[in-house]
Image (cartoon, rainbow, N blue to C red; front, side, top):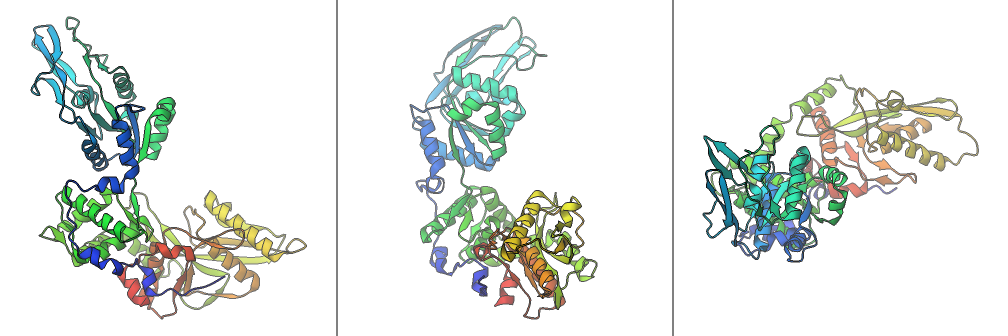
Amino acid sequence: MTITKLAWRDLVPDTDIYQEIFAQPHLIDENDPLFSDTQPRLQFALEQLLHTRASSSFMLAKAPEESEYLNLIANAARTLQSDAGQLVGGHYEVSGHSIRLRHAVSADDNFATLTQVVAADWVEAEQLFGCLRQFNGDITLQPGLVHQANGGILIISLRTLLAQPLLWMRLKNIVNRERFDWVAFDESRPLPVSVSVPSMPLKLKVILVGERESLADFQEMEPELSEQAIYSEFEDTLQIVDAESVSQWCRWVTFTARHNHLPAPGADSWPVLIREAVRYTGEQETLPLSPQWILRQCKEVASLCDGDTFSGEQLNLMLQQREWREGFLAERMQDEILQEQILIETEGERIGQINALSVIEFPGHPRAFGEPSRISCVVHIGDGEFTDIERKAELGGNIHAKGMMIMQAFLMSELQLEQQIPFSASLTFEQSYSEVDGDSASMAELCALISALADVPVNQSIAITGSVDQFGRAQPVGGLNEKIEGFFAICQQRELTGKQGVIIPTANVRHLSLHSEQVKAVE
């Protein structure tokens, strides 16, 4: 096993090499192929859908079912439309109970539209299909989204159709038949018997947008259509491979902010924004394209700046305010440790005890936070059984149990005993009263077990995280930044000695993006 001491520069993404890019004004013009550069697969799928010989009138797009994403897809589709602005549809002439349909001759006709792209994240039946109303003998026809999208594209969230399956059945029928029939959607309110409304030709293509779970439910409901539909995904992240990809991300962020009339990042704010972006993606070479994440940062910092850009100082202040605003629960958990209600030692040595690093997530709380956990192991004469107390007490999840068994398998293989080992051991997370899952503590559990077997003490000023395979190799785990910052907060409150630290898998170094407080302490 090789142990490498990390320098402070390893704790955050290196942004110094991109300073020239940050200093450039990231101006976006209408001809900038920004969407096609960042979403090449989705762009290609849209081109296939809009082709005159498209293989299907339906497209499935894996993306969050929020208006920001639907609008991005809609804008991209509009740029690809070759027949945009073409007059389609018709005009219903109502005379008493007599209704006639003629072809549209003007955009002012009641069911005429100019070929366009329509997007909706949630609709009801009348919004989607329009409605027929009769009041005091007068009949009025109101167009729906399908009529507005006639000749073009309708983009709709899958959750709408999964929650209202009758809407989907009728929409599919309209698209396949290329015709719209007026029917009563509510059986309790049928169309007037004396009214006969002629059907109208209606041709449109449909993009169904949904998360993985929605797509799975839709596939179960419509297996054949799911197989035949054009499929693509909105890529939520961008891999940083060179300076051009950084410039591309900066332009994307600037475009998203400007398009929503929000302040964009100033030159000195990009390093701060990238550090926060890396914390979001969990990868130094991966930056988010999520419009929701970008807009959240821009909206929150907007209250701190007056101009059309925000500075690094303003962004830092906003992030500190957000952490403080959401930090009550984390502070109370730290107080429990500092007041020794939860026993965590950060100095001295102990046999069979080690500080593992955990990430705590509470339902309904917006922020995950790190906390050290004391793992203990005791060994005694026995028949070779390894007892996982968490599992025995039904507090351990399946992944935790798997990690324990892998760790035990490695140890038995490494010892190479010719007969059954003459001892038993038990391991537990001390003062843990809720379910424990994940394998990120298996390396710490292995160290505690070896310490107890060899009667060798473990330095309590060092915490450890990482999973282990059957060959004893350390494997990367998640939540590194929160874990390190949680242990640092305890050590800082008790006074930093220069001897405290954490051990992480080498593969996790690329996931680090620590706050300036931890970076300065290492520096």
